[in-house]
Length: 206
Length: 208
Figure 1 (tube, rainbow over the protein chains, first blue to last red):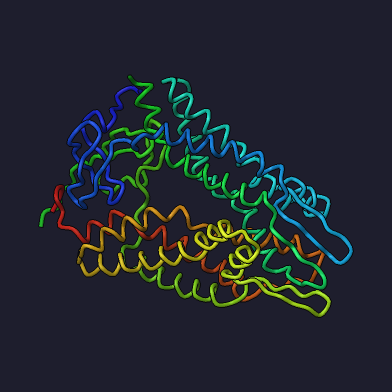
Figure 2 (tube, one colour):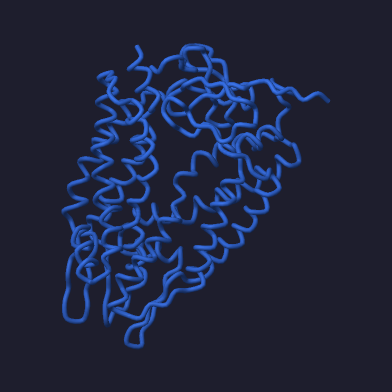
């Protein structure tokens, strides 16, 4: 806890998620907003357990998402399966390296970083660590903001499948990895939303 | 009327620090403890936000109506609209992924646009029917699931990926999509939750 800074919760005050008004808490955890009537929670309920459960589900699906093909391309003479990584390699060897870097970041760096960062945040918070609170809060903001960008590959796939439906010449079909990859993105976004960064400050302070 | 400039209390959303700030002079404000933006700069008011949201609706209607990309190869051609992208996955037994794509690029953006306009219209008329609160909750809940800017980037990647295979044409929907993104980013900045509530609700505390 920084010098002279007091948590609003310690004063029994909490900001309403719906309208932003400040509310007086009825108990230590719950109150009702006088402006809009919504129930307000001082902290997201069961935050760490929910964040951890969603993260574990994402970790499990991370393997099929990266190992199974997400796309099947059939042209007149040949057919090939693409995984996330081979799609990046194809862009790179095709000469468009700026896009290859972009897709590599969105589809491989960001999901991996998110899994590691969420695990770090959940474990350090659970262990009441004082370590680098400000940087950990910044890290949380980063993954909360950047997490959605992993959807990039899902949209590219949807557009390719919609466009390349020329039965005689070429077709592109989605592969089984696509479902797993989309699930990893959604689960990590949900996990980041379930995690309450204020708990880091609470637990380090007590 | 006397204007009272009492200091107001602010609560940081990310670390729960309780802060004192002057009512509207020191904008924007960052949390001294964890560096979160506690309060954003005010801009324009309800009328400006409403005008921008109407413009965004016009752009988004065009995005929905026209193809985003078309492809021509050996005399055959096909095109992809916003709906077509989700529909193509659905037709290939990927209905859950199709649902995700359709929700994040069509359903959520439309809901957010319509809810925003209804909120702003009601706020300008200083009315607060029961549905008002529900609209505010819907808007704040679904907002992170509007992913059109990522879809727009995806359309660029798709152009490059198919460029070696076939002739790609960008459609009206493609340009409308980028126009929509610019307008809706400005609209989202003009929309401030505090303005919406303050104009609709009699002030419960602070300067009258």
